[in-house]
Length: 492
Image (cartoon, rainbow, N blue to C red; front, side, top):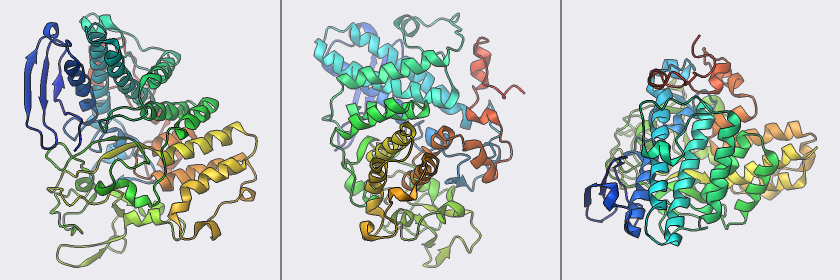
């Protein structure tokens, strides 16, 4: 049974808590004044858990897979994702400052950082024993660092609220300017580094922040910042925490194999209205016949472009999770390619037989171990003057499960195939696309390699310019705070 309690909202003046998880009966806490809350360990647990809800927000949230989510923002303009929906402006990178696709994440996460700060400061004042307070503060700092890192990577440095005075005493006169990149980068680094030292390697409740979760986000942040030595060090630390690759690629993403050893951090989901994963509704056509008897509410949106589908090596089992054909409800075999569709079906997550039609119970993975190994390989390639055997070994470790008789096949990688770091760099980027497709990391990868704009043009985006290196600050935020300067290119 999943243990994370879903709590609908937290207000600065008072808290409204509602929990319903698994087979537990709903518990109504009603409105609670800060003066009579934060008095017990249960209070601290409830307050901390409310910040986890900001990841999901009824299943439509910023860290799930719906419109305006981090997933969509990090897939748009890449070679591995497209949509059949009429998102012409967004897909063509004509990002509009008043469009939810561009501003939804901003609004949710700027507020979430402030709420996390508020709860941290209230816990500091709590009479509960210090060891318990430290545990919850570490989780909250991990979440706050997680939110801040993604805000920085999507929008650039922002005036986030991370001090007691601004969180406790909001004022209409508080109109801060944007901080420097150096300040926000240092803040994210310190937040995630510090909290990782206080977080356990494992939590008793699945879905809570662990040391691995904090270090994984820190690693991805270092990769974004091209801090290769630090990235290598953090990847090595994660490799010592006990994670292991699954022997079967498809098994990573199934309901039956939840909590497997490859998953570092995931958002718990249940096959219930607003508690599940919207993957299948986004990906499937209405006439798709489920292999497990689900009557899907299907919106026929996402596709994996054929060019990317065709890029996989012959025999790569990772490609099997992209459907070129499917059986319709009338029993007909529908070949999407010959039917003129723009791409294949993204069936990366295995079907959940308990899905009521829209909300799958597959836990939504945020970080997994294969990503860490590939980051380690990339960092080593940037550090060393030429490719090394350690890099090759890491790539082979990730690839081994994806080919039959891998070590004795032509797919087995050898150091002699990569004479320069430039050749290896391109191969690692390609390998990351095959391993991590549709996991919401591709735009970050392409940005890091200086290839995002070129790839966006190649896949047909028509409004590509340097401004697309960041998303625009939403118009309402600029109207509220005249000191908040827009990102370059969006005022033209």
